[in-house]
Length: 192
Image 1 (spheres, one colour):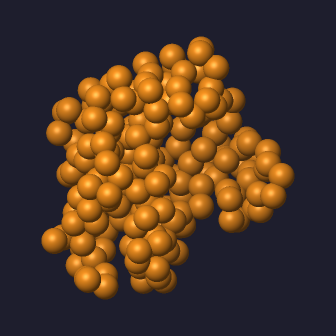
Image 2: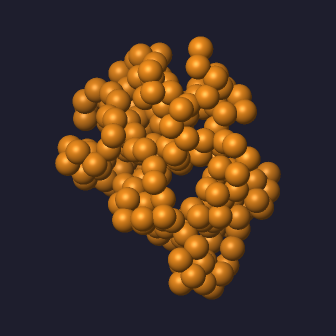
């Protein structure tokens, strides 16, 4: 087994809700402890019970978030469900300085922003379901959204799939089977 990726650039993983990004990322971290690092995002939302500042998120005020944007301190940011979320360049540099390969779970608008930032040289992976029907079934099975939110996520997924078809990602992985998809992700990450 390769102990460390030869290509040390950050890995940006994107894909619609319900495709299993979190599961694949967690397997990567679990199977290669001490190799990868997450960035802690900034958000204007209030902490949920048990969430610690600097661990779950950096919880900031809207004015602090705005100042970070104005300073060019965020590599990407988005507005979602009434709150702002963003990834600071500093957190990427801190993880890299520790010798870790940074893994970012970023939605499509964030991918566009990172690609437009010449200071961040990254590798891009898109995770998709085997079909749109499978994606819808997975989202329904989670039971975490009402029908209106579910339809919004599905509409968003269509846009993300169209964007992925433009060839902007270095690797597209179809997650029909977690072990097969993970094998593809691991091979890409380690350059095998």
